[in-house]
Image (cartoon, rainbow, N blue to C red; front, side, top):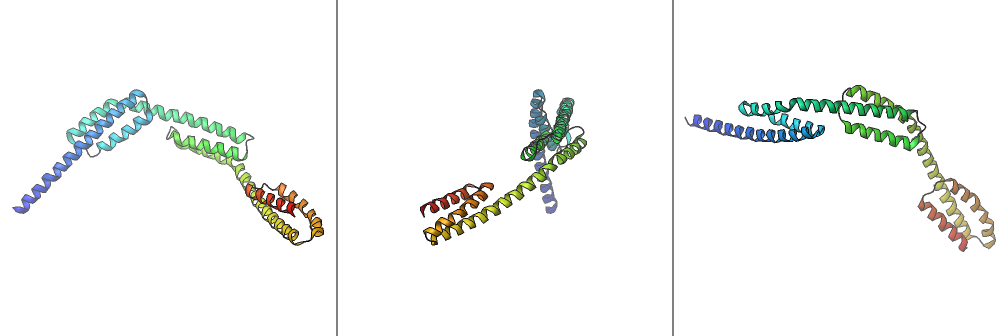
Length: 231
């Protein structure tokens, strides 16, 4: 008898919890339906999609009269929601077609290097904001193929640029070593030797000019010049 009573009490508690949960989800569904109404009236497709998803989530645990009541309200807006959803899918597809056309023009253009890479990146970012669309997969394949082809020259550009930076860095390191050696010789030599060694600065300056030195290296060069002048 006691076990039966305990089981009955547990069942009553579970039913009460389930009822409270369903009432809570029903309230959330009704609130989302109001959001859906406002979004549909304003023609806001993204907000409509978000509200619709919230309603579907809230519907899942509902049963009986609560579910039927929510479903009835939702059905009143289904046609308008589907129309707006179809329009968004169509509009997104049209915009994606424009991006595909723009990528084709970029591929055929003379724009190169960093400017081309920046344009490709911007197009990809805009594509992401459009979300799903009609012909979603086929449009993406076309866009991806064109963007890959358009980016191919950028790979060579950045590879050459990287190699140039490496070479310039090596030149700057060698130049600094040479300048330090020049100063060491100038500091330890007598006046006559100093005047003769001054000729070594000509080649160093030429090498330096051919390298795209950063500020730190320029300051080092100036420091060497000042030290040379003070000798």
